[in-house]
Amino acid sequence: MKAGGPDEGFVVWMTGLPASGKSTLSKLLEKELRERHGRRVEVLDGDEVRKGLSRDLGLSKEDREEHARRVSYVAKVLARNGVVAIVALISPYRRSRVEAEETVGADRFVEVYVRAPLSVCEMRDPKGLYAKARRGEITNMTGIQGPYEEPTGPDLVVDTSEAAPEECVEELVSGLRRLGKLQKP
Ligand SMILES: Nc1ncnc2c1ncn2[C@@H]1O[C@H](COP(=O)(O)OP(=O)(O)O)[C@@H](O)[C@H]1O
Ligand SMILES: [Mg+2]
Image 1 (cartoon, rainbow, N blue to C red):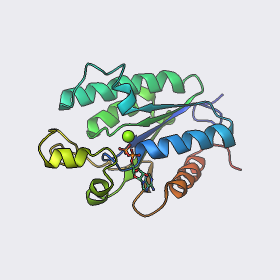
Image 2: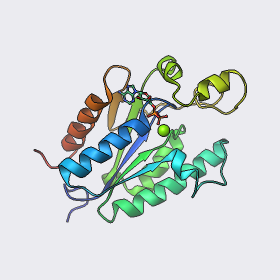
Image 3: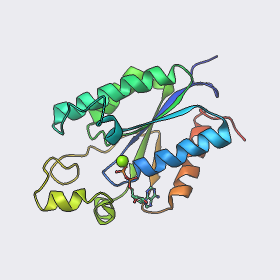
C-alpha cells in the first residue's frame, strides 16, 4: 500500500494555545474516524502523556521540545502500523513541529492549527490555568509568560471561536479527505 493512501496510518498533529480546543476536537475526531470510517485511532494528549512517558519533564523550552520529541516518536510508530495517531499538544515551538514532521515523514503528517484568539481561550479557561498564570501562581504558561509560535503553513486550520466543536470536526474530516488521507464518501 502506498504511503499516504486512504487506508494508511497518519498523524494529525493539533497545535494551539491552551484552551483552543485540541483535546475536545481530538476526542470527537477519534470517535468519528473510528465509528464512521472504521479506522484504528489513538489519541496522544499532551496532558495524559505528561502523567507517564513525560512525567519527568517540566515546562521549560527544553522540556517542551523533549516532550514533543517523545510524542512524535510514538505517533510515528503508531502511524506506520496503520493507526491514525491524533496528537493534542500545545507544541508552541515551530522547530518542534518541523522536527515532528521529519520524524513521522511528511507524507504521513498533517499539521492542524487549532486557532482561537488568546482572549477567547482565556475566557474559556476550562482548567483555570490562565487565571492562575495571571495571579502569578504558575509561570511558563503559554500565551501569558511563554511564547506560542503560530504555524506558518499548516495543512489545515480550524477556527474554534467561530464554530461549534462538531462543525470543526466536520471541517477536519473534509480537510483530511481533500488531503487524500480518508476515503471520499
Ligand atoms: N469549536 C470548538 N472546538 C473545541 N472546543 C471548543 C469549541 N467551542 C468551544 N469550545 C470549548 O473550549 C474548551 C477547549 O478546551 P480543551 O479542548 O481542553 O482545549 P485544549 O486541549 O486546547 O487546551 C472546551 O471547554 C470546549 O467545550
Ligand atoms: Mg488539552
